[in-house]
Amino acid sequence: MRSYRWFIYLIIGAFVIVSCTPQKDLMYLQLKKNQDTSYYEYNYTEGNANYSPEYLLKERDVLYITIQSTANVESNRAFLNNNNSYSTQNESSIYLNSYVIDKNGEVNLPNIGKVKLTGLSVEQARQKIEDLVAEWIVQPVVMCKMVNFKVSVLGDVNRPGTYTFYQGSVNVFEVISAAGDLTYYGNRAEVKIVRKTSLKDEIIEIDLRDVKILTEPKYYLQPGDILYVRSNKVTKSLSYFSQPLSTITSSLGLITTIVTLIFALKK
Image (cartoon, rainbow, N blue to C red; front, top):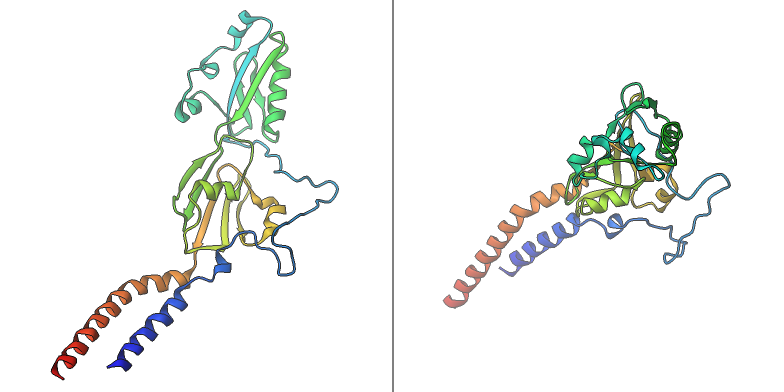
């Protein structure tokens, strides 16, 4: 009878070992074995900057634009419409009171008319509008912000969904953090970024375990990107099998105990 017990325990132990994901596969930003794990430094070559690449506006981007004069309040009426309202308090009202860049790469502003903004950074777009407005009002102040920086997260994360970011740049770890991190079964070595543009579709694969990702352009996401986290197939498949197996082994353990007790009482 004892041999049966040991056999059951052996099966359980072997299954637990096989189904576990190695700790190394769960760690982000790993260094090489010969590197100091307490400190990492990467020196960028001349001409390469250690910050996010500047995002250039494209068709269907949404901009929240306000135009004012600091010198003549009366002249503000020329540009006062729903897009300059300060009553915007939530995401939907901000979107409704914003300008969408059309298929020609333009926005249609009051009095100024159509202004081409595609291919410009947000700051360049703001400066261009301000220069045009200067012909209408004295000492213009223009605010220009993107309001459609949304990234969707799918796969093995704790909170999949679409997330909006009100900032100029977003990196992959900020998005993963918003989604509650990867689950235990999320494959950190094969995370994919799906990016759709007017000219091409891209699927970019990244390895979150590799510290070198910090130095690569794909570390930063773009509006409309989809981040997909694959499952670790072996671990997850075994986990599905382990649930009924744990029930079976528990039942076998109970039966073994009862049988042992019966034999002991007979003696």
